[in-house]
Length: 171
Ligand code: S3P
Image 1 (cartoon, rainbow, N blue to C red):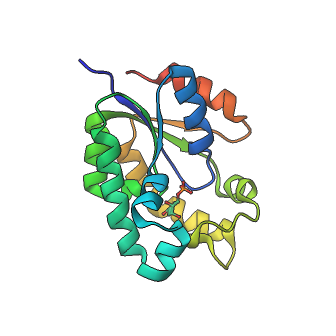
Image 2: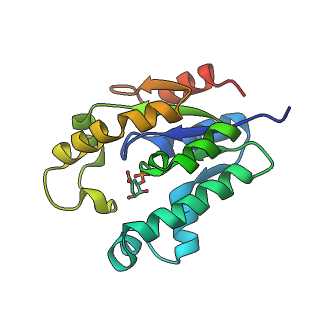
Image 3: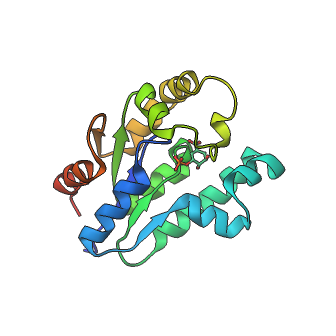
């Protein structure tokens, strides 16, 4: 049997891209970020897609990006945009082709990590910790349904999180 992709899901700022790149290097695999596929397909930044075309358009591009990443014949490391697992088709595709790891951290820690980064349209304006808390509450069931395993990342450097991910990963 071909090895499964290693898939990272979780909220914005939890470190999916950083940890994913580290895991990909250690596994000698390619790294795919669904947001990057969306930007390539949309021809503009995520924030511009949200602003000019709306969130539904973004989610459509994201669904295509997840399908493309999952369809890759060689096992890779896939970092999913934070909202990708809300779509049941995405969850099915990810679970069928991958081992799914939910990286988790409290909203306060995520808000700290994101600092003043303004590339996330869902966090524009307002209190970031409050928004992240609301997203975490609303999405917990979807992350849980998508994931094979959940890893708490608070206070752990990315390299340590990558160690834990690779320990639990069952290809
Ligand atoms: C989103 C997360 C972002 C990006 C978009 C929407 C979300 O990706 O896909 O801004 O709905 O949580 P990251 O989780 O990589 O920041």
